[in-house]
Amino acid sequence: MFMLTNKKMLTNKKNRFFFGIFLVFVLVMVIYAVFTFVVGIHDAGEYITLAKEMAGIGNVEVFSTHSVVYSAFLALFLKVFPSMIMIKLVNTAFLVLIGLFLYKVMNEKKAFLVWMFSPLVWFVSIEVSPIFLVSFFVLLGYYLFDKWEKNGEHKNIFLILSGLCWGMTFSLWFPSVFLIFVFGIFFFWGKKFNEFILFLIGMAPSVLVRFIADYAAFGFPFHSLVKYVGATIVIHSGLGYNHLVPITLGLLLRILFFVAPLTILAFPIDYKRHKREIWLLVICAVFFFFRGGQPDAIKVFITFAPLWVIVVGRTLTWKKVFLNSLVGLVIVVFLTSVYFTDTHETDLQRDISQFREDFSFNEVLTGKDQALNFASASWTTEPRFLWWKEYELWKSGGEYYSSYSYTIDPNIDLHQILYMQVGLRRKNDRGFDGVPLVSMEKDKEYEGFYLVKEYPAFNVYLPEKNLQ
Image (cartoon, rainbow, N blue to C red; front, side, top):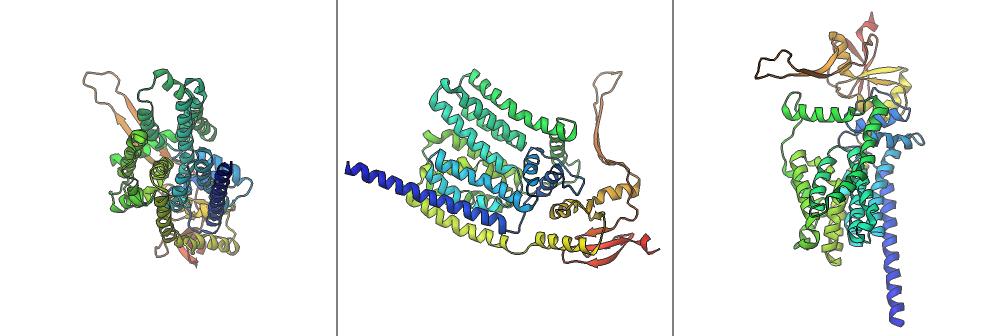
């Protein structure tokens, strides 16, 4: 009886310790979200401005290539408290939820510590992207699938719910198609066909979310799918401007040390127990390594990082887990310390506020590819920021941003030749007479404009016609 009491006391003490650690994790995450100045790594402007538009506080004609589901989700919170801090807190909440799920629901306490001190978690937490939600649904889908396997076919509801979660990853982020594909191959290997069908049935409602959201926003259910796939084809085929970047050593080093710095100490891993997880992690890591290239592409690894930390956590001893946490903490402090200093984003926000006091423009033209930067940093509906490319089309009398066509070359004497064309055109034929210009390219001279004021982050120009 005495031994049982002692064991219970030790368990309670251990639970209180981890609960305390979790509260520290939450507190530091909130402080980090509120007081860091850096916002976004890639595509953040698109998600922010679209969310603001959906919340009724738009200040730019939005650019949308990705799924609108994430932005629509953010808009719900922006209607309550419209600020960048709210967006950062929402994103941070999902990183915290993953930690809570590992610690409390899955009872993976080692994995929780690996997650808490993962440099990747802290590095990408300043991003504005659906990858945080995708990461959470990947973990939840994995957990529910495991519950189904342990409970047998009498608990098929877990399989259906797992499919629902994986389907949601597609609705949020198109590259999840690859994650779903790899998961399907390795986790359904040896399973019955009707079980796979149940999984697909579970996926169906959440997959439809993407198409319903597109229809509600654009009047066309496949808008984001067509634009994303089209843009990918254009970039990789060289039809348009090429954004492909070479593979870098920096990305490889981040893969090796950002998720769990001491992953190498987890070897040899129990292959029999984690065979499917290992194959999924290796194949996804290789795919996204060659797809991303640049060091910042490490951010997408957060989508399957929860499974990584689970495998590492189950394999490392407690001593190695604490050592990994110490190394991770050092890397985190080194990586994130610069996020607390003034950046271009803070200068831009401050200067836009001063600009609104100095001038009373309802709309302003922005420098090339700068509209989303200005619109993301401004939290008022005026001035509205106009696109430079739109201005160039207006000046030249053009209508289309881009246009692509394809004509088949038949091998027989065909009466009618199949011809297809797709492109992007101007929304309207508005003019730009008398519209001022703001630009972050401070050393550049703009034909037809003269400089009237300089701010630290940008310059203000007026049309030369105003001098006449």
